[in-house]
Amino acid sequence: MNCADFEILLADQLDGTLPPESGLALEEHAKSCAACAQLKADVTGAVAFIERVPQVEAPPQLVTRLLFEISAGPSRKLVKPSLARRLFGPWIEPILQPRYAMGMAMTLLSFAMLGRITGVQVRQLKPSDLDPVKVWVATEDHAHRVWDRGMKYYENMRLVYLIQTRLKEWSDEQPEQTATAPTAGSNQK
Image (cartoon, rainbow, N blue to C red; front, side, top):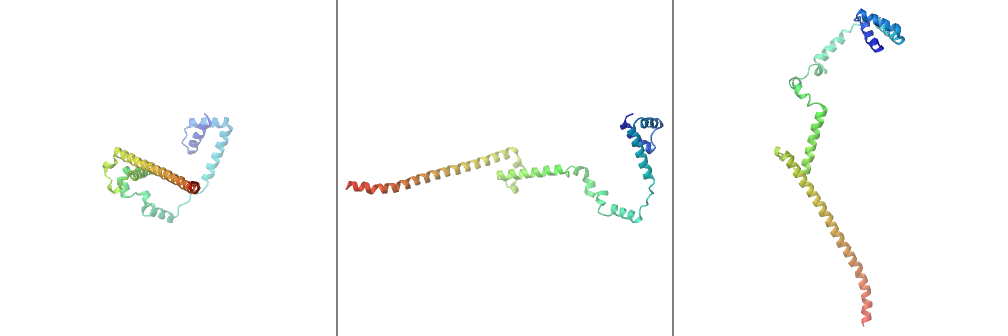
């Protein structure tokens, strides 16, 4: 017998359910193992101490209060579930699990975001609108439109920059030409 088996059998011996042959093996192990002998002495002393405590009778008010709580109080829901839970309990319990509820919420949020991106109005949503091919085509179309708008904005900014640069060059050349023009005109006279 090892120490783990000793601990298991010691609980049975204290309960009085241990067969006599196992009791002998238990006693022999306690004689050979000092740690198990000490454990047996400690557990026997603790059980003897607990047995000396007098039995306490529950006050009648406590019993009445417990019965009220179970039959009509706030904890009645735990003891006697509602009619809906009794009728739909086996089917609705998995749906009420936090993981499933969060999964459903995330699915709805994803569809709402896809609808927002593709421009589908929720009031106009039909089951055919949830076709993955239609969703993909609408998303791709929207992405191309955003890309085209960005490129158009970039090209327009580039054109505006080129025009402003050319105008600045011309305006810088204008004072130079006017400054050099009178000197050229005076040479001609």
